[in-house]
Image (cartoon, rainbow, N blue to C red; front, side, top):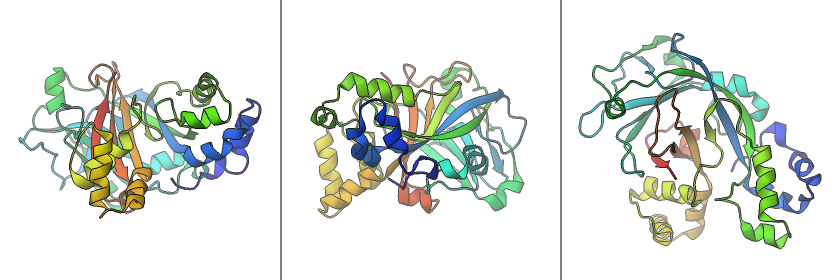
Length: 303
């Protein structure tokens, strides 16, 4: 993971743990915190071109065609993120160093079945093309709107930055046992610190909402091999094979996998990811830095 954003450097984590008598966890949490950008729902509508938005339709340059599924159906636009706006709202001292500061990201998905390897496309509009974007409606009903039998309501979104510690599905419980810290004590502290902001609708980076804690290896395996299985050992074997037998490189691919975006189910917008779950998009950190959105992965989690 990248260096910690400036606002959280120094003794920041130590000070959070000291009054909870969990200082022994500092080395572990310093190694496994994730920067996170929370996305909060703003006003309804899409009147202003180019602002960050979830739901509704995107703002695109004229030369960009609306993404289609392999079957020729119109993909559904789920979000557009103005990276300059997000950077300004979050502030430089709370941004991870791999976050691109300019341009527009537009996220599209096809049918959200099955829950893995969901057909999708992420469009990146460079800053120099932002002056030519315009609100765009699809020529046909998009695939998820047809399934939901309604259009999705647009809401502007705003961002704030923080760091996030491992949730129950990702925490190393051996670390807690070794330092004589009860599971409940850590998880209660973690939930208090990482309480969701009001009107939160999604996030960039951070830890995925999950039950099994294997999202990163699933995404890395899918991106690099094109394969999917629920067998974690087999995933790792495929990944090691793809890395020419180099286990260290395979582990690095997993460690540097980023959750680019996660969007929650929301009645006001109309999103319902299976049984009130979440949809998330993953990317390799190296590809994000290079603004290469051709190798990404989309899946959803629902309890």
